[in-house]
Length: 370
Image (tube, rainbow, N blue to C red):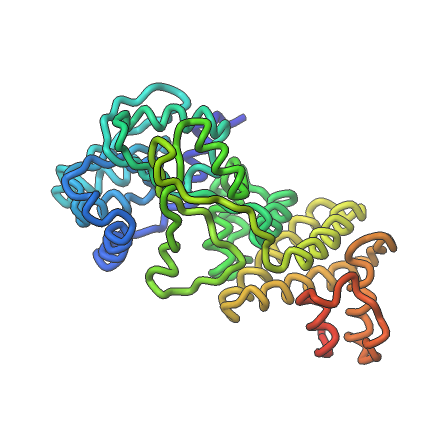
């Protein structure tokens, strides 16, 4: 049985063992930090918590911070980044191995950077209580990044983790050659992380408020800022927060795009995992869904393309494994419509649960192939 620290280190190695830092990447990160903080970063001390590769720590110095306290619970992350800083003569980054949930960490920062970590932490409320102590002044700033609930990404990741979550780096590397590059880059994170939470806007706001933090600015993500690939199937919460309610922004929960389509996909997946298919075969199906989803995102650069590919992949599994859908299932009408499309039969008289969904429109206007 692995300890919590060993799980964290395994996850970190899965994520970062093959990463290499480069100046162009650090420059892009620094430009993003200047977009987020502006002049408020100049001369400040920053805590980069769960620094991972160390790219953001380096970028903070380049963007104007005077000192960075880089903290990570993964022993190998600390060793790699400490070695990098020594070899490159970087003296203004203090690298610390630590976990605020295990032992107190002494710091007196102006800014705390929580990028890509909050959704991996349990319990999150206690974590934030300890994190806020790292920047005790009233005017301290906290940058929070968290996964958004009810997204298409949530369905795909949770579905696949149900049948192929990896406890260690070596097990993931055994299966990684079966994944496309896009799926492998996501899988090394989403399938190996020990824990993932997903937050609605209101949930995240309530969690932060319980520790006296309030969002003041909502930012575009790093990818969108750099005009690189970005679509709406997954847009994490990225909020600049401060103590006190002055200047806080309104946080509302909005219906997700493709929500009805995602409910169809969930229904299909539930039928698959409860159909008595052997566990090794379910794991292969999970990897197949992960491949279909992230390859479609990369190839079509649209959420629409991913929704359609996910549906057609799950339809193939249902048919090839003779899985019967309950007539009350949200997916049953869609599979009937899909079979008509597949066979070239008329579809205009077949009712879907909602003809406003992307899947229903695609099936009515295309002859699909599996």
